[in-house]
Structure formats: structure tokens, C-alpha cells
Length: 400
Image 1: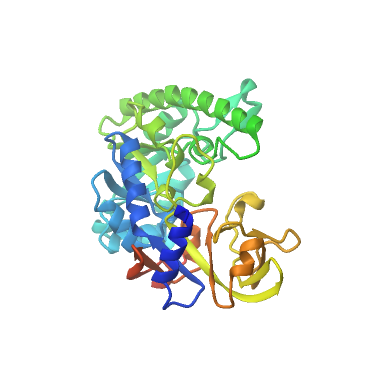
Image 2 (image 1 turned 90 degrees about the vertical axis):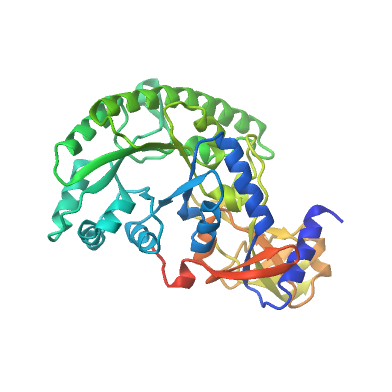
């Protein structure tokens, strides 16, 4: 029996009392992935990206381990909810236009001390001030650096379109503007190199593309390490008490941690290890989060149909954004139908061994987005479900 077949047997036994659709997290794999992130971080603390987890119980499980400290959130409403729930260090990774949230933040000393907001434009400060509604608490601010690799005088850009702050002068200029403004305090810098941390460099069947990605990423790491260090020096000249410099992502943990200028690493997807992280040479994780759909039809030889399953991931649309049939091994989508909202045909010889009601296990393309589809995650240890915990959705929250 292969390791994957053994996992399927365990998951089927553990969830035999549960009807699919159902989602699980294999705690042994989750903990092993957490240990690997800590190892790669080389002593620097890892801030857990909540977007990639979306389950308070599992955020708490990660943060209880040595090597993890703080949460990186994705909306202001989520940040405030986490802070009210007892999370004491929440960095909002994206600028917000949530006026009601800012009014609440600036009126509550506990929230204001726990939550740091992201800023890359003075207009965002104006929005916060306009939303204060009498709140006088000082707002903790993190400045985001654009990490994109720019070539040929800027005519070629590789990387996400995020912050307009690119040079040390850009970031230091905004730091001075914040420092002059009552009610705000610069406490950190963030730089997320998504084109390094979030792009696989070993795509099966594409050796030339993979080689090109590795060359690009090596160049991007060198350029960013030099520029990030210069940015930190420039900002520290304005804000000597800077508390943290955040960088990285699951795919670049060890590279970013090697930079002296960086004080902490952001990572979250590496806990669940979705399918988009199968194509990396820098690390190998264990799939920890899976979902199962039930077989409801047997259209013919070499074919079954499962209920639902069309859970595409965000990003540029493509086959790599679809969940992948994982267990039993050897199933594939019908190219004429793909993954459907209500039903999904699957092809392959393993289909002939599946009966009506059997489970087919899938991996999502991304990590936390799976939790937008399920109210609960069943935590598996060995061949038993030992706990069932709510996702954000299960607690009544869909923040985006």
C-alpha cells in the first residue's frame, strides 16, 4: 500500500460516521509543516497569515508552538474580531476603507494596542482621521514596500501590483509624513515578495519555464535584499524605535530569513500545503487540509460523478486554480466539464472501484479559501476525528 493509499484508508475510517461533503485537517501533517516552517525560519519568528488558515482554533494551535508569534490578518473587521477574541498582535496586511472599523479601532485602547494597520498612501491616513468619530487612540501603522523586480528601466515589471512605495526615499518620505501627524505611529515595515514566495519554480512538464522562474527569483532575491536593507536604514533614521520588519511567505521563508534587515517572517499556506505548493524546489510539505465529495453517480466504465466540488481559487483563471482529485490516486476531470458547482464527473480506472456514497478526497489550489466552503474542520489524528472546530464561516464571519 502506498503512503497516499494509507492516508486515504485513514481518512475514510476517521470520517466513516460523517456524510460528505466534509473537510478535514490532518494534525500530524499540520504540526510537521509547522515544524518545517520554524526550521526554515532559522530562529526568526513566524507571523501566521490568517488568510491561509481561517480557523481560530488552528491559528491558536500554530501560535502555541515555539517559533510563531503574531497574526497577519486580511481585513480590518477580521483584525478587530481577532483582537477582541484575545489575539494581542495583529498586523493587517492590506489597506482598508472600513470607516466603521476605524471608528471602533480609534475609540478602544485595547484594540488600538493590538492592531497595526497597513498604509502606503497619505490618503489612507485622511480616511482614518475622517472616520475617528471622536476616537483619540493612536493608530499603529505599518508601511508597505513594493517588492516587484523592475527591469529595463522599469519597462518590465515582475511581481504583484501592491504598494506605490518602491525606493528608500519613497518609504522614508511617508514615514516622515506619519511621524508629523498626530494620532499615528509608524511601528513596522512589510514587504511581501509574492513573485518569489508564491510562484512555484519546478512546474512538472515545463523545464524551460521552471528554469526561467528560478533565474527570475534568484535575481529578485538579490535585488530586494539590497533594496529592503536600504529602506530599513532610511526609515530607522526617521523612526529609530521601529518594532518589526516583516517579509517572506511560505515559498521563500529560508531566503527571506537570511536577510539581516528582516526581523520576522510571514507564512500561513505552508501549514495546510495546498496544491499550488507542489511545484517548489525549496521545500516539501505534507498536504494537511483536504475535503471530500460523495460519489452520487456511476455514468459508465471508468467514470463516477461526485456532488459539487467546483471550488476555484482566486487569481488568474486557469486549470491550476482548480482543486485536484487526490484520493484515490489516478482520477482526473472530464475536460469537457471540469469541476462543477453541483456535480463533477471524474474519469480514470479507480472510478470502477468506487461505490455510491464513497468519498473522493480533493486538495484545494489555495489554503484558507477552502474554509469559505465549510462551516467546520474535522481534526484527524491517526484514523480518528479527535475534534471538530469551526471555520470563520462556521462562526458567522465571511470577511470578504
